[in-house]
Image (cartoon, rainbow, N blue to C red):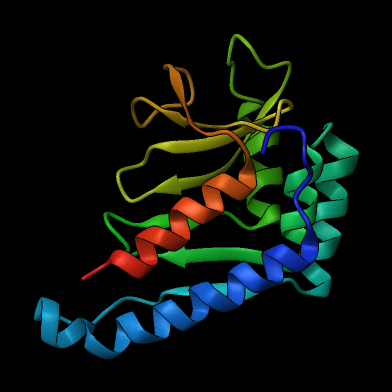
Length: 165
């Protein structure tokens, strides 16, 4: 719900459910698709990713839900879910922010790119907590709202993992 903040325990539970769904998906992937799967994983945070999250916090006013996410997981690589989904490691977000800055979204004061899909479209979280997806594979074109919150985005992603043939 808008206004509520992401809870670390909820993220841990989401990660466990995603991991279980990925295990099930990988068991049947070769038979279903005729080729072996890529490396699909939602990785737990490490001391290194916590340090990178700290660097991101020092660099920019990071939305608190993204900090909570990165305190639990460091990144996700899901190349075999739909066309692919990738939650970038905090060090990657720092590098992108230094190189490109925040993305410009009219209704957001600041929006940070934190993920992408296999087609190169970007996902950004704004200071409002909403998650936006680029309309093209570009940092400068338009962005549309895809989720009211980071939790809603993760719920959608979890459903995609579970519904993957």
